[in-house]
Image (cartoon, rainbow, N blue to C red; front, side):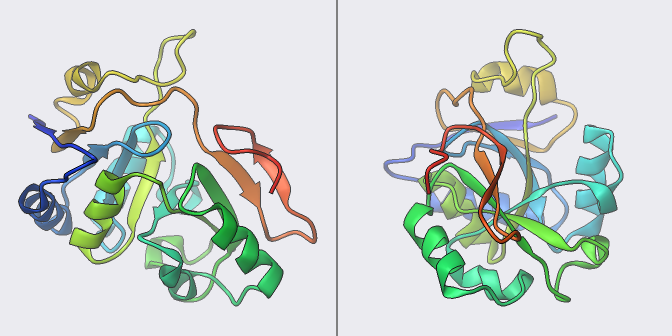
Length: 205
């Protein structure tokens, strides 16, 4: 059964974040708040946990379009090919923020993603999400929590999320009501920034 933990963005409980991060290293799945919708994530280095998330989403892990939730832009060189100054300026100007930027991947991608040529990078403007990444010590593999309701695409109430995912994940972090609009997804691997999905972030970069 999932443990429901209340955290506050203004003053995050570091002890709790460290406890959750420790469990993530051991394979725990966590639902947590971002600057857009609630996300489902795990440790990027734990293959078994990534496989679990892929199974929950009904996709093959090697083909899944999961995002890498990073603390800041310093993580870029670990997983992406060298980017030009124009691309870096776009990233620096818009992150942290409600964007997923698709960038060219490199040979350091986790084994499960070795065949992927691109990677989606997120740096959410949310202290709980960033604090969890810091406590973990490396990026989080993440995907948005979808709602099966035809009207509501995303569930925004943490208590309802906990009720639905209670037997599927290990932790649900209650960071208050979530958003109901996902991140704006921009492909930066093309000659000009290309909009893949319009979301909370502006499409004018």
